[in-house]
Image (cartoon, chains in turn green, purple):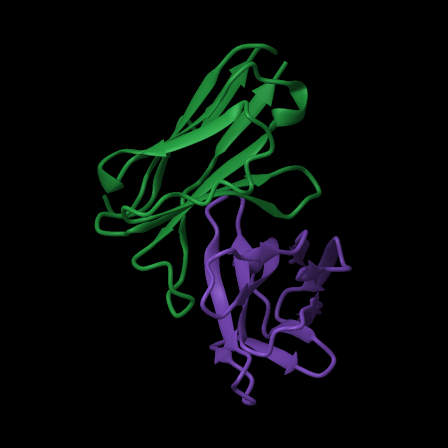
Length: 115
Length: 114
């Protein structure tokens, strides 16, 4: 596609349910990031994928959070047993090499609301 | 650990006027990059401007320019001739050279008044 695509755009769920958030990066981009944006907070790094290397999961806040990237393309962020504090905008970004000389291309995010 | 601070949660500017958004950062590294990203209501962040720390010359992109003060660890964004379309959240970000983990500030919401 022409840009980074995220789905769903908005997700409302009940506390305790599992949710899956999807990110479809720009074709050919090897680097993919997930960030969490909470109200009044900056972007919080969650996880980074680069090619076939092991992902950097150091930003995942708990073991309820996991992410995978299939075939070096589409990525899914899964939150199990959602809690109200998980409510936030989840942003995905990609770039060709993950090099600072490039710019990040962001999706429009998924607004997650946990009731 | 590196940190990025944006001390202005919200700013307003009259259309066609100039506004400056502040950003300070803390790092012990000498080689790094600084960025300003714009997030409009669509939530899709876009890069406004980038500065390499080794460059003394301030970056400019049309109506957007930065005032990079390396010793003071300050990286402010100046928007000239503000337009209604400039209304957005602006995030300052830092990246150590050779790494990939961007550090973002908490953002400044810019309102442009007609």
